Image (tube, rainbow, N blue to C red; front, side):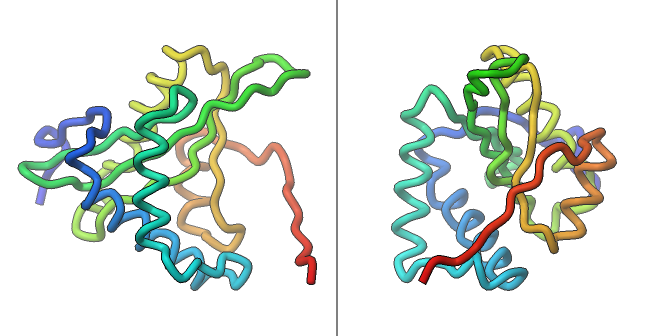
Length: 160
């Protein structure tokens, strides 16, 4: 299935909610499988619905979708963060990216990332980063191939 030319990249709209929420839930459950520190909440679907709606109403975040025909092939969500003490001051952070299995290995993720970078630049961002579980080697390879490099380490400790 060649889909590259048949994919439309656009901003998410309210009517995309059901499909995007499904993809968010799948992604978060996959993260949980990678690392127990990503234990999902009981009401994950309701939380994903709120997350989607909050993103649409927030000028510091956005979602770009890859539409193929009547449905969505995938999405990317980005937050703009003020780095206050550093230049460039505004950083775009990819918090979520998901491509449905039947659309994978067709450059949809790359197209979404490039479109998100374009939108982030338009909104004043001078750099882009991505968040993903350390054991997600597919994500590590994906971002490396797009020119991302390791920059900052974030460590965790559970508090009981």
